[in-house]
Image (cartoon, rainbow, N blue to C red; front, side):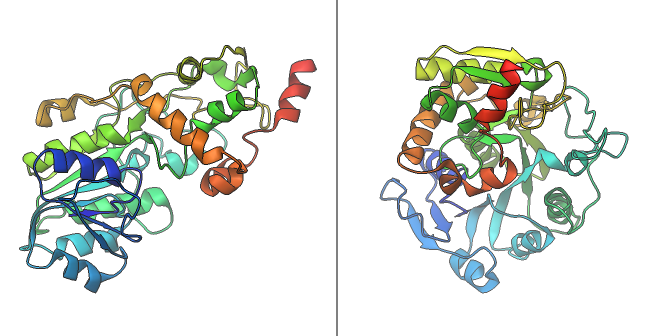
Length: 336
């Protein structure tokens, strides 16, 4: 059973497991009405917060439970509470749980000198933030701790995803370049010399990790990212190539000047994760590179923007980056 089957990660997870011969129950709030799966995939409606509904969908049991929307310790207890009725579980977490040696993490990024200084690459043994209920990162840490506690009774693979990308994303970072190209903007400005690296994670590569972990049940934590972590300048060039446009890029040596130079990948220090444990333990090899994944993403974004304001199409992205397309500020900076 896949919980959250209708979302960005859930869809390719269902596809990967079905191709691998699993009889899949795809559970989501909307019943994944628009998903084009084989007839062998059973779809059901499920509210993730409904304990009774979850237990009813699991029924007499299942060999594998995949939870792509688990968020906190309460969700972890829902999963472990099914011990004896599920064979194993794979649960999606986030690289945002990592903390550097100075107590900095994703929650301190907005503070002066608050951006974490992680090792490159970041191994799964890197310390994590204290579990709690205050933030996304602390809730994910609490989720992990509860899932992996002794006596949980269920073999659980926790996958720490990077910057997830692909169709059906509520926060599509690629929109930064795609919309500019669609608007005819051929000049752009990138902070930190365009060298920022924030490790991407294709939803299809995450699905491959789920597939591999399903065949090798165990209790473990693994990073879940693509094979490479391109720079933001490299990402822009790859999107340009897909869209068949040529652009010019100006660079800021340091941080963004207000909104100018800011992108969803613009970070002062690299966030690059070590994927060797997944390779060693599961035999993981990415099924798609970042560049190979882009045509599908660009096509989906182009359709999603057709006749719509980007804020309406992607409200979560607009909330996180309200000035992502401040063209007037860019023009003023370029002519100053």
